[in-house]
Length: 219
Picture 1 (cartoon, one colour):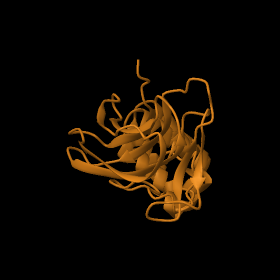
Picture 2 (cartoon, helix red, strand yellow):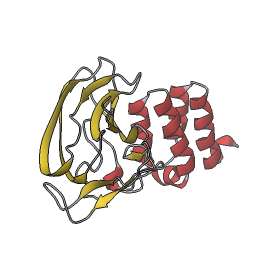
Picture 3 (tube, one colour):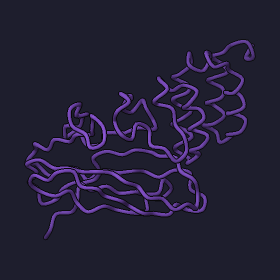
C-alpha cells in the first residue's frame, strides 16, 4: 500500500508537486521521518528543483533543509550559504542553494590560502583567448519581501587583463530584473577592495540571484 512504502510516498509527493498540487505534495513529503527523507534524497532533490522552477523558494528551502548533506549547507532567509567560503560546503548542481558554475571556460575553485577576513576565498582563473559566455556563476539566496538590503563583498585581481572583466549583479528570480550591479573588477594587480550593493526586494519576492557575470566589451 502507498501508506506503507516510503519511496512510493516520496515519489507521489513529487508527482503532486509536478502537477501543481503543491500543498498536497508537501503534506505527503512531511509524512516521511527525518531519516526517510534523507534516504529518499533523489526524490527530495527533484522536489526542490520543481519548487524552485515555479518560484516557491520558501517551500524549496524547507525541503532542501530536510536533505542537506551537512549542517553548513542548510539554508535560512537572509543568509548566504558559506558566504565566506570557510565552511567547506559542497558546491555544484546537486546543492541548490549554493554557487552554481555556469561557465566551464573559466577555472573556478576555492583559494585555501588567501581571503579577506578569513583564510579562504572564491578564485576565478581566466586563461582563455576565446570570447567568454556572459554568466560565470550564480547563487540562489532566500530573502524577505519588500526589504532593503546592503550586500557587501571584497574583490582583488592579479594580472587580470581584459576588455570585459567580471562584475556582480543582484537579480530577481521571477524575471531576472537587475536590482543592483557592481563596477567591473579592475585590471592589473589590485589588493582587496570593498564593494557594497544596496537594493530593495520586490513585494512578493522570496529570493534573489547573485550573479558573477562578464562585463560588456567597449566598442
